[in-house]
Length: 231
Length: 244
Length: 53
Image (cartoon, rainbow over all chains, first blue to last red; front, side, top):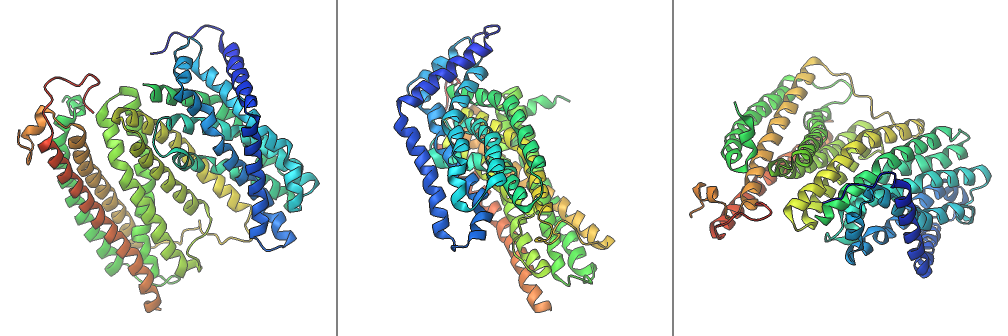
């Protein structure tokens, strides 16, 4: 089913997939903007549903922003693989002699650049309305910077498993959200720790470790899932 | 003895039937003994009164929820490694039972928590990771239903199960760690009450009963799955109830 | 004391009993349905190219 991988082609394959997906994403800038607006909407709706208590908002702020990031990442996942699957491009990609894991990694990186990175950069904009300040915002952004790539990596596995399956986005959410739980716990926990006066070093270190493990394992799992879907 | 011949659904079908019946009897007898020990022999607990007796179903259910997932993962690994369809069928048969065990663990845990610690639910490591485990089970079941081609579903569910099995310890430790940081607010639900030997015997007996039950039900279910998926095969004609 | 605790014990054990009965009945029903399907299924005269499901 797969041709023998071209030696030393990992980096070129990664670059190619990354460039292609980023270019395609920027051709529909509206879609990216809409995703960001969805994130903003979730962030805005929460305070409206809670009592107007400053301390309460600051306490739930990191959690809300993290859950919103999760949902935004989830929403963008169909673009990662399903679009290519439906028009046959994914099959061509899988048939190429380049390592599928490298190509999938490039796509995941593109997903993060267009979904996760904007959230990280815009953290102060969304965190200030919750009454978070200074170090809390920095740690929140750092947590998101480490955690959103993990969301993209894990999300790719789920997206690949649900290719061509019924149930669409809800099924994908059901499969992936349990896997997201530790990322959420440590990411939101980091900001909470800073607010409580305790350091966030341990949280961020664990997130970093999780990111390394995800980078090491997720592309291969996702590539295996893609091959399963294409059989 | 050539065990590998049982990798064929056709030859495993009658064996599964006999084993299911045997394990069902074992489960019933062990449950009778366990319930007798639990309700008649074991004394009223000094601190918790009568409600502690819930552990005789809660702990077995919780252990089975975890153990069944591990066994499912083993069958999934075999399915991906050897490409045998019976391995996938076994994983498929175990999922609903595991999900049920997880649900019963949560349900009985809630009714044990209320009289003991005053709350039906607490976000401690065990309950939260059992809840997430339930979602993992439901995810595998949902994925199987969502993919039409049985063999593709086998492989996808196997991969998902293996990804999940790596996550279960991660989830448990992350929630446990998250909890210890909020020491003041939460009650220490992880400290199991000291148990008299009698109570321990009852609990272990019930756990073995639950184990035998899960095996029996899974084997009975795999028989149904085998028939569902082997439609039209020649050997099926010889099975009771199927003519030609 | 016993009264209040009886409620919790009953809720737990009743759930377990109902669940076990329900699961057993469901598996039995699934078996019957599968045999019903097998009875009506056309026999395979040549092996399925992808192997039987």
